[in-house]
Image 1: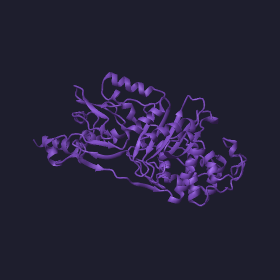
Image 2 (image 1 turned 90 degrees about the vertical axis):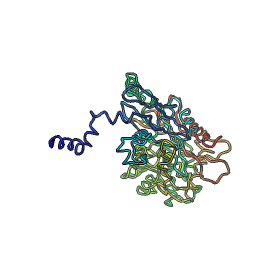
Image 3 (image 1 turned 45 degrees about the horizontal axis):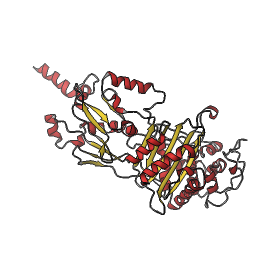
Image 4 (image 1 turned 45 degrees about the vertical axis):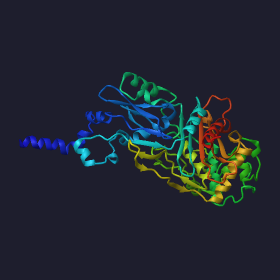
Length: 471
Protein backbone atom coordinates (compact mmCIF):
# COMPACT_ATOMS: atom_id res chain seq x y z
CA UNK A 1 0.00 0.00 0.00
CA UNK A 2 2.84 2.36 0.91
CA UNK A 3 4.65 1.56 -2.34
CA UNK A 4 1.49 2.23 -4.38
CA UNK A 5 0.93 5.52 -2.57
CA UNK A 6 4.52 6.59 -3.21
CA UNK A 7 4.21 5.66 -6.89
CA UNK A 8 0.91 7.52 -7.28
CA UNK A 9 2.40 10.59 -5.61
CA UNK A 10 5.47 10.46 -7.84
CA UNK A 11 3.41 10.21 -11.02
CA UNK A 12 0.65 12.68 -10.13
CA UNK A 13 2.74 15.33 -8.37
CA UNK A 14 6.41 15.19 -9.29
CA UNK A 15 6.00 13.96 -12.87
CA UNK A 16 2.82 15.90 -13.63
CA UNK A 17 4.44 18.60 -15.75
CA UNK A 18 6.62 16.14 -17.66
CA UNK A 19 3.72 13.84 -18.46
CA UNK A 20 1.38 16.70 -19.37
CA UNK A 21 3.87 17.82 -22.00
CA UNK A 22 4.95 14.41 -23.21
CA UNK A 23 4.48 14.13 -26.98
CA UNK A 24 2.80 10.74 -26.50
CA UNK A 25 0.12 12.24 -24.25
CA UNK A 26 -2.92 12.87 -26.46
CA UNK A 27 -5.21 14.13 -23.69
CA UNK A 28 -4.29 17.85 -23.97
CA UNK A 29 -4.75 17.69 -27.74
CA UNK A 30 -8.12 15.93 -27.40
CA UNK A 31 -9.23 18.47 -24.80
CA UNK A 32 -8.08 21.39 -26.97
CA UNK A 33 -10.30 20.29 -29.85
CA UNK A 34 -13.18 18.97 -27.72
CA UNK A 35 -15.25 22.14 -28.25
CA UNK A 36 -15.61 24.88 -30.86
CA UNK A 37 -12.67 27.26 -30.90
CA UNK A 38 -13.14 30.97 -30.17
CA UNK A 39 -13.12 33.32 -33.14
CA UNK A 40 -11.03 36.04 -34.73
CA UNK A 41 -13.21 39.05 -35.53
CA UNK A 42 -12.90 41.73 -38.22
CA UNK A 43 -15.22 44.74 -37.90
CA UNK A 44 -17.23 42.78 -35.33
CA UNK A 45 -17.79 39.77 -37.59
CA UNK A 46 -16.05 36.39 -37.21
CA UNK A 47 -13.71 35.41 -40.03
CA UNK A 48 -13.19 31.99 -38.46
CA UNK A 49 -15.42 29.19 -37.22
CA UNK A 50 -15.38 25.53 -36.13
CA UNK A 51 -16.83 22.40 -37.70
CA UNK A 52 -17.49 18.96 -36.13
CA UNK A 53 -15.23 16.19 -37.41
CA UNK A 54 -16.86 13.10 -35.95
CA UNK A 55 -13.42 11.94 -34.76
CA UNK A 56 -11.37 11.99 -31.55
CA UNK A 57 -10.50 15.62 -32.21
CA UNK A 58 -14.10 16.74 -32.19
CA UNK A 59 -13.86 20.17 -33.86
CA UNK A 60 -11.54 21.61 -36.50
CA UNK A 61 -10.97 25.21 -37.54
CA UNK A 62 -12.80 26.76 -40.49
CA UNK A 63 -12.16 30.10 -42.22
CA UNK A 64 -14.38 32.61 -43.97
CA UNK A 65 -12.44 34.18 -46.86
CA UNK A 66 -9.37 32.31 -45.63
CA UNK A 67 -7.03 33.62 -48.32
CA UNK A 68 -8.15 37.22 -47.70
CA UNK A 69 -7.19 37.18 -44.02
CA UNK A 70 -4.43 34.54 -43.91
CA UNK A 71 -1.70 37.14 -43.27
CA UNK A 72 -3.72 38.30 -40.25
CA UNK A 73 -5.05 35.08 -38.76
CA UNK A 74 -2.30 32.59 -39.52
CA UNK A 75 -3.55 29.01 -39.23
CA UNK A 76 -4.80 26.56 -36.63
CA UNK A 77 -4.26 22.95 -37.67
CA UNK A 78 -4.85 19.76 -35.72
CA UNK A 79 -1.77 18.33 -37.46
CA UNK A 80 0.59 21.27 -37.95
CA UNK A 81 -0.10 23.52 -34.97
CA UNK A 82 -0.89 27.23 -34.80
CA UNK A 83 0.71 30.42 -36.12
CA UNK A 84 0.28 34.19 -35.90
CA UNK A 85 -2.87 35.31 -34.04
CA UNK A 86 -4.07 31.71 -33.91
CA UNK A 87 -0.81 30.83 -32.17
CA UNK A 88 -0.29 33.88 -29.96
CA UNK A 89 -3.82 33.59 -28.52
CA UNK A 90 -4.15 29.81 -28.72
CA UNK A 91 -4.94 29.42 -25.00
CA UNK A 92 -7.64 32.09 -25.11
CA UNK A 93 -9.21 30.72 -28.30
CA UNK A 94 -9.19 27.13 -27.03
CA UNK A 95 -10.63 28.06 -23.63
CA UNK A 96 -7.59 27.06 -21.54
CA UNK A 97 -6.41 30.59 -20.68
CA UNK A 98 -6.72 31.21 -16.89
CA UNK A 99 -7.97 34.72 -17.69
CA UNK A 100 -11.24 33.13 -18.85
CA UNK A 101 -11.89 31.26 -15.57
CA UNK A 102 -14.58 32.77 -13.37
CA UNK A 103 -13.99 30.34 -10.47
CA UNK A 104 -10.55 28.94 -11.14
CA UNK A 105 -10.42 26.55 -8.18
CA UNK A 106 -13.91 25.16 -8.80
CA UNK A 107 -13.21 24.77 -12.54
CA UNK A 108 -10.03 22.86 -11.69
CA UNK A 109 -11.86 20.54 -9.28
CA UNK A 110 -14.70 19.82 -11.72
CA UNK A 111 -12.39 19.76 -14.76
CA UNK A 112 -14.78 22.18 -16.42
CA UNK A 113 -13.57 23.60 -19.73
CA UNK A 114 -14.44 27.20 -20.42
CA UNK A 115 -15.74 28.24 -23.87
CA UNK A 116 -13.04 29.73 -26.07
CA UNK A 117 -12.65 33.50 -26.06
CA UNK A 118 -12.57 35.83 -29.07
CA UNK A 119 -9.87 38.10 -30.51
CA UNK A 120 -11.14 41.38 -31.97
CA UNK A 121 -8.69 42.62 -34.61
CA UNK A 122 -8.08 46.18 -35.82
CA UNK A 123 -8.42 45.27 -39.51
CA UNK A 124 -10.61 47.37 -41.82
CA UNK A 125 -12.25 44.85 -44.18
CA UNK A 126 -12.53 47.34 -47.07
CA UNK A 127 -8.83 48.24 -46.81
CA UNK A 128 -7.86 44.57 -46.53
CA UNK A 129 -9.84 43.64 -49.63
CA UNK A 130 -8.41 46.59 -51.58
CA UNK A 131 -4.89 45.52 -50.62
CA UNK A 132 -5.29 41.93 -51.74
CA UNK A 133 -7.12 42.85 -54.95
CA UNK A 134 -4.52 45.49 -55.75
CA UNK A 135 -1.66 43.05 -55.39
CA UNK A 136 -3.48 40.51 -57.54
CA UNK A 137 -1.23 37.77 -58.88
CA UNK A 138 2.00 39.56 -58.05
CA UNK A 139 4.31 38.65 -55.19
CA UNK A 140 4.12 41.45 -52.68
CA UNK A 141 2.68 42.86 -49.49
CA UNK A 142 0.73 45.76 -48.01
CA UNK A 143 0.71 47.16 -44.48
CA UNK A 144 -1.66 50.01 -43.59
CA UNK A 145 -1.72 51.81 -40.23
CA UNK A 146 -3.89 54.42 -38.52
CA UNK A 147 -1.14 56.95 -37.62
CA UNK A 148 -2.79 58.42 -34.50
CA UNK A 149 -3.21 55.04 -32.77
CA UNK A 150 -0.98 52.50 -34.50
CA UNK A 151 -3.98 50.30 -35.30
CA UNK A 152 -3.21 48.09 -38.30
CA UNK A 153 -5.95 48.54 -40.89
CA UNK A 154 -4.66 46.12 -43.53
CA UNK A 155 -2.04 43.39 -43.62
CA UNK A 156 -1.87 41.50 -46.89
CA UNK A 157 0.63 39.15 -48.50
CA UNK A 158 0.49 37.55 -51.94
CA UNK A 159 0.32 34.92 -53.14
CA UNK A 160 -1.97 33.91 -50.28
CA UNK A 161 -3.41 30.59 -49.13
CA UNK A 162 -6.51 29.16 -47.45
CA UNK A 163 -5.60 27.94 -43.93
CA UNK A 164 -8.80 25.87 -43.82
CA UNK A 165 -7.48 23.40 -46.38
CA UNK A 166 -5.17 21.71 -43.85
CA UNK A 167 -6.98 22.37 -40.56
CA UNK A 168 -7.75 18.70 -39.93
CA UNK A 169 -5.93 15.37 -39.95
CA UNK A 170 -7.17 13.73 -43.16
CA UNK A 171 -5.13 12.68 -46.16
CA UNK A 172 -6.58 15.65 -48.03
CA UNK A 173 -5.31 18.01 -45.32
CA UNK A 174 -1.84 16.49 -45.54
CA UNK A 175 -1.84 16.74 -49.33
CA UNK A 176 -2.88 20.42 -49.18
CA UNK A 177 -0.08 21.14 -46.70
CA UNK A 178 2.53 19.39 -48.86
CA UNK A 179 1.39 21.30 -51.93
CA UNK A 180 1.80 24.60 -50.10
CA UNK A 181 5.21 23.61 -48.73
CA UNK A 182 6.43 22.59 -52.19
CA UNK A 183 5.15 25.73 -53.93
CA UNK A 184 8.19 27.79 -55.10
CA UNK A 185 6.16 31.01 -54.72
CA UNK A 186 5.96 30.42 -50.94
CA UNK A 187 2.32 31.38 -50.38
CA UNK A 188 2.66 30.74 -46.63
CA UNK A 189 5.41 33.36 -46.25
CA UNK A 190 3.95 36.46 -44.60
CA UNK A 191 5.70 39.06 -46.72
CA UNK A 192 4.17 41.96 -44.78
CA UNK A 193 5.71 40.88 -41.46
CA UNK A 194 8.32 38.20 -41.96
CA UNK A 195 10.21 39.26 -45.10
CA UNK A 196 12.64 42.17 -45.41
CA UNK A 197 13.42 43.98 -48.67
CA UNK A 198 15.81 46.79 -49.62
CA UNK A 199 13.49 49.82 -49.41
CA UNK A 200 15.24 51.84 -52.09
CA UNK A 201 14.23 55.48 -52.34
CA UNK A 202 11.35 55.17 -49.86
CA UNK A 203 14.09 55.28 -47.20
CA UNK A 204 14.86 58.84 -48.32
CA UNK A 205 11.96 59.91 -46.07
CA UNK A 206 14.02 58.71 -43.09
CA UNK A 207 17.12 60.50 -44.39
CA UNK A 208 15.20 63.73 -44.98
CA UNK A 209 13.74 63.51 -41.46
CA UNK A 210 17.22 63.04 -39.97
CA UNK A 211 18.69 65.94 -41.98
CA UNK A 212 15.86 68.25 -40.92
CA UNK A 213 15.80 67.16 -37.27
CA UNK A 214 19.57 67.60 -36.92
CA UNK A 215 19.76 71.00 -38.59
CA UNK A 216 21.65 69.84 -41.67
CA UNK A 217 18.78 71.29 -43.71
CA UNK A 218 16.82 74.25 -42.32
CA UNK A 219 14.80 75.25 -45.39
CA UNK A 220 13.52 72.61 -47.82
CA UNK A 221 13.44 75.19 -50.63
CA UNK A 222 16.97 76.50 -50.12
CA UNK A 223 19.84 75.11 -52.22
CA UNK A 224 21.79 72.38 -50.47
CA UNK A 225 25.55 72.12 -50.67
CA UNK A 226 25.28 68.77 -52.42
CA UNK A 227 27.81 68.72 -55.27
CA UNK A 228 27.39 67.06 -58.63
CA UNK A 229 28.79 64.61 -59.30
CA UNK A 230 28.84 63.40 -55.72
CA UNK A 231 31.80 61.04 -55.33
CA UNK A 232 31.28 58.84 -52.32
CA UNK A 233 33.87 59.49 -49.57
CA UNK A 234 36.98 57.32 -49.74
CA UNK A 235 36.16 56.14 -53.26
CA UNK A 236 36.36 57.28 -56.85
CA UNK A 237 32.76 56.18 -57.47
CA UNK A 238 30.07 58.78 -58.08
CA UNK A 239 26.58 58.17 -56.71
CA UNK A 240 24.48 58.02 -59.86
CA UNK A 241 20.93 59.28 -60.35
CA UNK A 242 18.08 57.64 -62.23
CA UNK A 243 17.18 60.86 -64.02
CA UNK A 244 19.35 63.55 -65.62
CA UNK A 245 17.13 66.17 -63.99
CA UNK A 246 19.11 65.45 -60.80
CA UNK A 247 22.46 65.96 -62.46
CA UNK A 248 23.30 69.43 -61.15
CA UNK A 249 24.70 70.93 -57.98
CA UNK A 250 22.80 72.96 -55.43
CA UNK A 251 19.41 71.26 -55.66
CA UNK A 252 17.05 71.96 -52.77
CA UNK A 253 15.78 69.14 -50.58
CA UNK A 254 12.30 69.61 -52.03
CA UNK A 255 13.61 69.24 -55.59
CA UNK A 256 15.74 66.26 -54.60
CA UNK A 257 12.82 64.43 -52.98
CA UNK A 258 10.42 65.24 -55.82
CA UNK A 259 12.90 63.98 -58.42
CA UNK A 260 14.26 61.23 -56.08
CA UNK A 261 17.90 62.30 -56.44
CA UNK A 262 20.37 59.77 -55.07
CA UNK A 263 23.30 62.17 -55.11
CA UNK A 264 21.61 64.75 -52.87
CA UNK A 265 20.10 62.35 -50.30
CA UNK A 266 23.28 60.26 -50.14
CA UNK A 267 25.27 63.45 -49.50
CA UNK A 268 22.81 64.63 -46.83
CA UNK A 269 22.96 61.25 -45.07
CA UNK A 270 26.74 61.54 -44.79
CA UNK A 271 26.50 65.16 -43.62
CA UNK A 272 23.97 64.15 -40.96
CA UNK A 273 26.33 61.46 -39.69
CA UNK A 274 26.14 57.81 -38.75
CA UNK A 275 24.83 58.12 -35.18
CA UNK A 276 21.97 60.53 -35.99
CA UNK A 277 21.00 58.40 -39.00
CA UNK A 278 20.98 55.24 -36.88
CA UNK A 279 18.92 56.98 -34.20
CA UNK A 280 16.33 58.17 -36.71
CA UNK A 281 16.07 54.74 -38.32
CA UNK A 282 15.52 53.17 -34.90
CA UNK A 283 12.75 55.68 -34.19
CA UNK A 284 10.79 54.01 -36.99
CA UNK A 285 11.41 50.42 -35.89
CA UNK A 286 14.66 49.53 -37.64
CA UNK A 287 17.00 47.19 -35.73
CA UNK A 288 14.20 46.14 -33.35
CA UNK A 289 14.30 42.35 -32.99
CA UNK A 290 11.26 42.30 -30.69
CA UNK A 291 8.64 44.22 -32.66
CA UNK A 292 5.52 42.29 -31.62
CA UNK A 293 2.11 43.35 -32.91
CA UNK A 294 1.58 40.83 -31.08
CA UNK A 295 2.85 38.57 -33.88
CA UNK A 296 6.60 39.13 -34.11
CA UNK A 297 7.86 40.95 -37.18
CA UNK A 298 11.22 40.20 -38.76
CA UNK A 299 14.03 42.58 -37.79
CA UNK A 300 14.44 45.44 -40.25
CA UNK A 301 18.08 46.44 -40.69
CA UNK A 302 20.03 49.68 -40.76
CA UNK A 303 23.71 49.03 -40.08
CA UNK A 304 25.16 50.68 -36.98
CA UNK A 305 28.81 50.48 -38.11
CA UNK A 306 29.64 51.81 -41.59
CA UNK A 307 32.19 53.95 -43.39
CA UNK A 308 30.98 57.09 -45.13
CA UNK A 309 30.53 55.58 -48.57
CA UNK A 310 28.44 52.78 -47.08
CA UNK A 311 26.42 55.38 -45.17
CA UNK A 312 25.78 57.26 -48.43
CA UNK A 313 24.38 54.10 -50.00
CA UNK A 314 22.39 53.19 -46.89
CA UNK A 315 20.86 56.69 -46.83
CA UNK A 316 19.16 55.98 -50.17
CA UNK A 317 17.91 52.56 -49.08
CA UNK A 318 20.73 50.47 -50.54
CA UNK A 319 23.80 48.63 -49.17
CA UNK A 320 22.53 46.49 -46.23
CA UNK A 321 19.41 48.52 -45.50
CA UNK A 322 16.33 46.25 -45.52
CA UNK A 323 12.83 46.59 -44.11
CA UNK A 324 9.50 44.89 -43.71
CA UNK A 325 6.47 46.62 -45.21
CA UNK A 326 5.23 47.05 -41.62
CA UNK A 327 8.25 49.19 -40.67
CA UNK A 328 7.99 51.27 -43.83
CA UNK A 329 4.32 51.89 -42.99
CA UNK A 330 5.56 53.11 -39.59
CA UNK A 331 7.82 55.58 -41.44
CA UNK A 332 4.85 57.02 -43.35
CA UNK A 333 2.70 57.03 -40.20
CA UNK A 334 5.36 58.90 -38.21
CA UNK A 335 5.48 61.65 -40.83
CA UNK A 336 1.68 61.84 -40.79
CA UNK A 337 1.37 62.03 -36.98
CA UNK A 338 3.76 64.93 -36.23
CA UNK A 339 6.66 62.61 -35.53
CA UNK A 340 4.78 60.38 -33.09
CA UNK A 341 5.46 56.79 -34.11
CA UNK A 342 2.84 54.63 -32.45
CA UNK A 343 3.42 50.96 -31.63
CA UNK A 344 1.61 49.01 -34.36
CA UNK A 345 -1.18 46.81 -32.99
CA UNK A 346 -3.20 44.16 -34.77
CA UNK A 347 -5.59 43.44 -31.87
CA UNK A 348 -8.11 45.81 -30.35
CA UNK A 349 -9.36 43.66 -27.45
CA UNK A 350 -9.80 40.15 -26.11
CA UNK A 351 -13.22 38.94 -24.95
CA UNK A 352 -14.97 35.93 -23.49
CA UNK A 353 -17.39 33.99 -25.65
CA UNK A 354 -20.30 36.16 -24.46
CA UNK A 355 -18.46 39.34 -25.50
CA UNK A 356 -17.45 40.48 -22.01
CA UNK A 357 -14.04 42.10 -22.06
CA UNK A 358 -10.96 40.23 -20.91
CA UNK A 359 -8.37 42.77 -22.02
CA UNK A 360 -8.35 46.06 -23.91
CA UNK A 361 -5.17 46.89 -25.82
CA UNK A 362 -4.57 50.64 -25.69
CA UNK A 363 -2.53 52.72 -28.16
CA UNK A 364 1.11 53.04 -27.08
CA UNK A 365 3.79 55.49 -28.19
CA UNK A 366 6.75 53.69 -29.77
CA UNK A 367 9.07 56.69 -30.28
CA UNK A 368 8.82 60.46 -30.66
CA UNK A 369 10.93 60.66 -33.80
CA UNK A 370 10.87 64.44 -34.26
CA UNK A 371 8.72 67.49 -33.58
CA UNK A 372 5.82 69.08 -35.40
CA UNK A 373 8.01 71.57 -37.29
CA UNK A 374 10.03 68.81 -38.91
CA UNK A 375 6.83 66.86 -39.56
CA UNK A 376 5.27 69.80 -41.42
CA UNK A 377 8.32 70.06 -43.67
CA UNK A 378 8.42 66.30 -44.23
CA UNK A 379 4.74 66.18 -45.17
CA UNK A 380 5.31 69.08 -47.59
CA UNK A 381 8.09 67.08 -49.27
CA UNK A 382 5.88 64.00 -49.55
CA UNK A 383 2.94 65.98 -50.96
CA UNK A 384 5.21 67.45 -53.63
CA UNK A 385 6.32 63.93 -54.61
CA UNK A 386 2.69 63.02 -55.30
CA UNK A 387 1.64 66.31 -56.88
CA UNK A 388 4.74 67.06 -58.96
CA UNK A 389 7.00 64.03 -58.91
CA UNK A 390 7.21 60.27 -59.19
CA UNK A 391 4.13 59.55 -57.05
CA UNK A 392 1.44 61.02 -59.32
CA UNK A 393 -0.40 57.70 -59.60
CA UNK A 394 -1.39 57.99 -55.91
CA UNK A 395 -3.41 61.17 -56.32
CA UNK A 396 -6.94 60.93 -54.87
CA UNK A 397 -9.58 63.53 -55.83
CA UNK A 398 -10.74 65.44 -52.76
CA UNK A 399 -7.81 64.26 -50.64
CA UNK A 400 -4.34 65.40 -49.69
CA UNK A 401 -1.83 62.63 -50.31
CA UNK A 402 1.85 62.56 -49.42
CA UNK A 403 4.13 59.74 -50.51
CA UNK A 404 7.48 58.47 -51.72
CA UNK A 405 8.30 55.99 -54.44
CA UNK A 406 11.13 53.51 -54.47
CA UNK A 407 12.55 51.05 -56.99
CA UNK A 408 15.15 48.85 -55.32
CA UNK A 409 17.68 46.90 -57.35
CA UNK A 410 18.97 43.62 -55.92
CA UNK A 411 20.75 40.41 -56.83
CA UNK A 412 24.21 39.84 -58.26
CA UNK A 413 25.06 42.90 -60.40
CA UNK A 414 21.44 44.04 -59.84
CA UNK A 415 20.25 41.13 -61.98
CA UNK A 416 17.12 40.42 -59.92
CA UNK A 417 13.67 41.79 -60.73
CA UNK A 418 13.54 45.19 -58.96
CA UNK A 419 11.32 45.68 -55.93
CA UNK A 420 8.69 48.37 -56.49
CA UNK A 421 7.85 50.37 -53.34
CA UNK A 422 5.48 53.13 -52.33
CA UNK A 423 4.80 54.60 -48.90
CA UNK A 424 2.13 57.22 -48.30
CA UNK A 425 -0.47 58.84 -46.08
CA UNK A 426 -3.77 60.50 -46.97
CA UNK A 427 -6.45 62.74 -45.43
CA UNK A 428 -9.46 64.70 -46.74
CA UNK A 429 -8.47 67.86 -48.59
CA UNK A 430 -8.43 70.90 -46.33
CA UNK A 431 -8.21 68.83 -43.15
CA UNK A 432 -5.54 69.60 -40.57
CA UNK A 433 -6.28 66.48 -38.51
CA UNK A 434 -3.88 63.56 -38.32
CA UNK A 435 -4.31 61.55 -41.53
CA UNK A 436 -6.43 58.45 -40.87
CA UNK A 437 -4.26 56.12 -42.93
CA UNK A 438 -0.62 55.48 -43.78
CA UNK A 439 0.41 52.64 -46.04
CA UNK A 440 3.42 50.80 -47.41
CA UNK A 441 3.32 48.64 -50.53
CA UNK A 442 6.02 46.43 -52.00
CA UNK A 443 5.68 44.49 -55.23
CA UNK A 444 8.45 41.92 -55.04
CA UNK A 445 7.99 40.12 -58.33
CA UNK A 446 6.01 41.40 -61.29
CA UNK A 447 5.76 40.50 -64.95
CA UNK A 448 5.28 44.15 -65.93
CA UNK A 449 7.49 45.51 -68.70
CA UNK A 450 8.49 48.53 -66.63
CA UNK A 451 8.93 48.10 -62.88
CA UNK A 452 8.79 51.28 -60.83
CA UNK A 453 7.34 52.18 -57.46
CA UNK A 454 5.20 54.88 -59.03
CA UNK A 455 3.89 52.59 -61.74
CA UNK A 456 3.21 49.38 -59.77
CA UNK A 457 2.99 50.15 -56.05
CA UNK A 458 1.43 53.63 -55.97
CA UNK A 459 -1.93 52.56 -57.52
CA UNK A 460 -2.25 49.79 -54.90
CA UNK A 461 -1.58 52.26 -52.09
CA UNK A 462 -4.12 54.61 -53.62
CA UNK A 463 -6.87 51.96 -53.58
CA UNK A 464 -6.16 51.09 -49.93
CA UNK A 465 -6.21 54.74 -48.87
CA UNK A 466 -9.42 55.33 -50.83
CA UNK A 467 -11.04 52.41 -49.01
CA UNK A 468 -10.19 53.97 -45.63
CA UNK A 469 -11.24 57.47 -46.71
CA UNK A 470 -14.45 56.13 -48.22
CA UNK A 471 -13.76 57.68 -51.61
